[in-house]
Amino acid sequence: MIGKPTRLLLASLSILMSTGAWADFTATPTEARAIAKEAYLYGYPVVEMYKTLYTQAVDQGGANFKAPINRMGHSAQVLSPKDTTQAKANPDTPYSFVWMDLRREPMVLTLPGIEDDRYYSVQLIDLYSQNIAYLGTRSTGNNGGHYMVAGPDWKGQQPVDVDRVIYSESNLVYALYRTQLFDEKDLNKVKQIQNGYKVQTLSGYVKQAAPAKVAKIEWPKPTAAMTDSPQLFRYLNFMLAYAKPQDSEKDLLARFATIGIAPGAPFKLSQLSAEQRKALEQGIADGKAEFAAFKKDKLDTLQVTSGELHGSRDRLKNNYLYRYAGASQRLFGNSAEEVSYMTYAVDSEGKPANGARHSYTVHFAKDQLPPVDAFWSLTMYEAKTGQLVPNHKKRYLINSRMLPNLKRDADGGVTLALQHHEPPKAEQSNWLPAPPAPFYAVLRLYLPKPEAVNGQWKLPPLTPLK
Image (cartoon, rainbow, N blue to C red; front, side, top):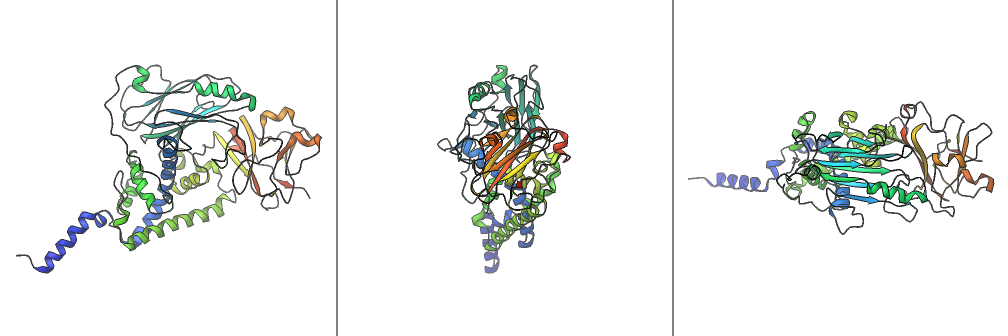
């Protein structure tokens, strides 16, 4: 016969085992806080990526829906300040989008041949937000071709006429296409090129029977606080089910398991004790504090450039703080060799750029224009909103295609005027209108030359006019 204390103990154990609270969560509160910090920095880019996947490929009634999974969507327009769905919108290269589910079979992406003087690219991104490969001008040229993207479990044969196979460590992959837009009159040509982009299943491409169906994915609906609270770990568990664990992360994933983070497992936040929950919240706060210090000490002082925050796993070397910083500063940012980004946020005196206080100049000496193999573009944004700046000229950027129409200095260089007040007519070709408020301007270098990537070429200062 079992005594009363024993019966109570067994009953307690039974309740704990059925809720899974302690079965999954074995870390002490102190351990949990440290692990939660690691898991937050690791998981934030994955969950931010999921937000975009859901809005672009799952939420069919949503304003930002593009196309269902394994289908292509396009966004072809000449951007203006009326387009407010996205901060830091890029007017240079209209986008096309494909979210791929590679569990059943690989996908084949077909690119059309385009003219030599136009840039295009396909950035392939795994579910960790890492850039796994590029197709297009820099990497495969402008002649087009057929390219296959395969998941980690695919073991088949490469078709003879497929130019290249890209293997992903995750079964969910994002293909983000950029097609250079010359000017407003060029939009129809861009749409024509976009219509030549094709995406097919491998079986559809080789005209064979499709493999057996895979389980339908039940996509969890995003919530408002999903990247700022322990809810993040629920979405991280969901996403990790679609990636192959990497040997280099074995110990890390074992630590994560002690706070309930495991691929495909339900994350039972409601069943955690107040102490456990607090430990997770403190860990997330610690992760945010580490990034804030890194931003202040390294990013804001340009000791670490944005190009160092994006790239493949080999390039990032499992530096999860860098990967987090990349996702929080510019989700889906390009690898440095594809596009370099440089920002004018402060002037040569270290003061925030403000069109209400000053007019500014940027002077490129004769042989010191941004060094690129494709093109460069300087775009003006309002600092508060990140939106393009309304102006009667309808000019939101100055780019290298406009060089023949820009006024040259006596030394053969080019001086741009970044200001709110309209300059005299003779100076207007070089005017980039600024708002009567704080602003920043982003210089994008498409296919930057080595001297731009290695820091040998210096961005000229933003000089306030007295």
